[in-house]
Length: 152
Length: 445
Image 1 (spheres, helix red, strand yellow):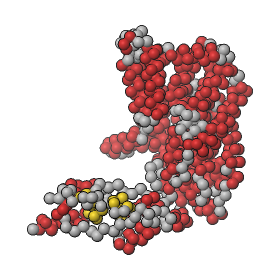
Image 2 (cartoon, rainbow over the protein chains, first blue to last red; image 1 turned 60 degrees about the horizontal axis):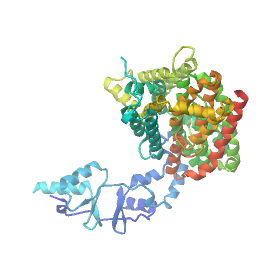
Image 3 (cartoon, rainbow over the protein chains, first blue to last red; image 1 turned 135 degrees about the vertical axis):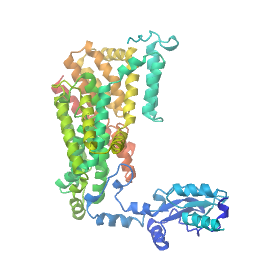
Image 4 (cartoon, helix red, strand yellow; image 1 turned 45 degrees about the vertical axis):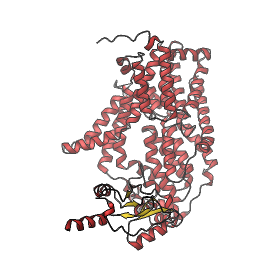
């Protein structure tokens, strides 16, 4: 059985790489989601994660490899966060490192899709035959489908 | 067990001199391209030296300076454990607060702290510890981190020149020439302190006098609580105890008849013991495995390979030939020889890795022992050390620490570009070599 059998894919919501991080954050908060797919002219461009946006509020010296191990000594750091918060409106989605995820299509076997979902901490994009973005496959959707099939 | 001496002919009946030089040049050429990891290239070159019949395995192993390898590995283990205590962050934040977060005062303090740490730790570790704090403070002060990162690079290479353990070239020179920790302290530390102070003068006129931060932003930095950086007080005490012991060991090494490699390795083992003695066997293995994993094995294996490659050309007689050529060229004039070594080391080390250069130059200087007195040879070691270590400041690729800082600056959105860096750094580096020349002249020549 392949993904073709999973009938419902969540409604695709897409932002462009030029969307500001502040707009992307508002969208996530409105929709109650942690990730938003990024599409460039209908083609899959990656996934922007709410953790990337949180990271933009931190001092760059504490992000990434070999950074500061903790920031307790800075105090509450409200002033630092406020400075970085203002910059969110000027930074674009393309400025953050988007999650590089494996892509699925209608011919992906269900077992393989389950394995890939298990290995990545995010929903995975499903692409059409021409490479256009169809929607995201989440753990919930896949598990709901499997449970309903098992019931029959 | 007796090993057969290597044949007078190498592979295919070729002269060992030609074969070994070909392998040497090929190895160094591939290292310079940076297309393949340098440790792999050095080890392949070492293997070729043996397969081509220039060296046998026993001679190759004999060429590996285990004193250097143990000193490096031991210090890496000690540093890997100590940095977890947060002590370096504590000192950097404290230094910023001592000068009331004044931008120019901060630059001076961070340079001095970097130089001091570099003198006792390896330069890459130092900048890995200092650069993130530097970026955080400049972020809070809302000023450009560029002058600070530039000064951190300079201070790390200058400070590293000061002691036996500050920079790998010094470790190699000290080990090969049997120069002690105190020899370096008496002969290099004074001039290094002077160079550090003098370097800050142009930095002030170029950037320092224009740096400005608002009182609110300075108050933010003054609000930092450096005590909160100490994450593990017990670890801090253990680490400082062992470091004090190891440095005392280095200072006394000569009088107690021990080599620095033994002292560093013993210190590492002692600190590991203090970390794990009260843990279960499984937790012990886990903690020690993790600490050993933080040793920079790329650097260690790079050294191993290089030592064998250099042993190959040394045995074939190439380095003695080069030493003769240098002495002939300088007319056997000692002063000229010292200056040639100083300036050539500086210019070459600013574009190529100073480790392979120094590994090659050590046997060259050793074989000048037939022309110059032992005191004169010692002066040549200081010239080599000053040239090779300070030369690293000349360009962005002159030392690994420079590239580490550049990588962090890039991630912070303040990239340090090759050419603009060189336009500032190369003249400053030459100035430090000029100061070294005057120092050598006044003290030894």
